[in-house]
Length: 330
Ligand code: ADP
Ligand code: MG
Image (cartoon, rainbow, N blue to C red; front, side):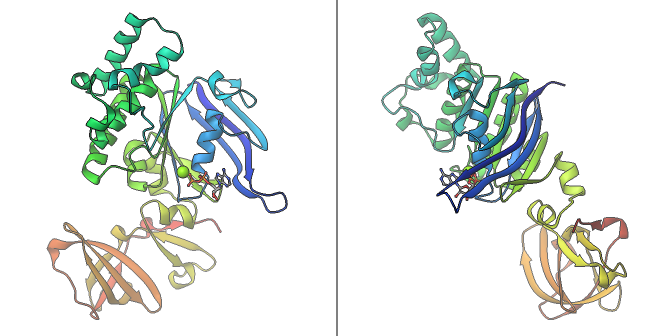
């Protein structure tokens, strides 16, 4: 497998001399060609800056950016085989949809007939064939985002960067666009780097992802690896949510353990390993989220709603398989 992007010890700081913000603080990352790769993390963790470093819109203080085996650290954006889709679409309001999509080809001097053919292909790809003559203002948010995607793909970059592209869409449309994006990426076989702060989105769309915190990568791997084997408390909590349990209470002194809420069984009082008082009941439809107090340790449990729900203040027993516990790094 070839490597599309290789980042080596990347550092990028902003702000006045003397009190710089380390937006990117020593990032090493290899992204295989043809993957849907997500950068996941809370706001301010450095995701956009990493994307801008890959695109060439930002220069690192130190470290190396390689694209398809070539060191491009000193190259300007237009010399990199990359395009970017932003959250705010950035379409030209005075141009038709067709001309917006063809714009990058116009800039590159692609002749008229070829330009129209390729723009047409891209509009087919994003299922907007019938909308070529409209203006962006005459489209819905989801359609505008698809025009932005078609435009970014028109020049056939080898690598597409997407910075929270679905952030402005409502939930239903966002879920539909997630599937469309994934299917387009598979059809074209291109490398997509997708920035999001939404862990559900990153888990469901990605071949692989990197979890960012404070300008560093906490952990990278497949969605399954990150969910099943989080190495740090941050990853356990940010990806999926977890109970962080003190090993002292489990006969494992010195260890810090993570336990997914759906792995906690809630039993009648008197049964199980721990006794706990119900402090919160949050009905979510198919499942209900319980907050329980087990002698000073808060435990979250996700249980099927159909089995009947406890009331606030009631006592329940808690149990879990030892194999559900994950030991975290200190
Ligand atoms: P994310 O995309 O994960 O929300 P960013 O990469 O945008 O994070 O920002 C990382 C950190 O760098 C933040 O603390 C942000 O305020 C800071 N930062 C980003 N860009 C600039 C800039 N141009 N000038 C000053 N600080 C910046
Ligand atoms: Mg950002």
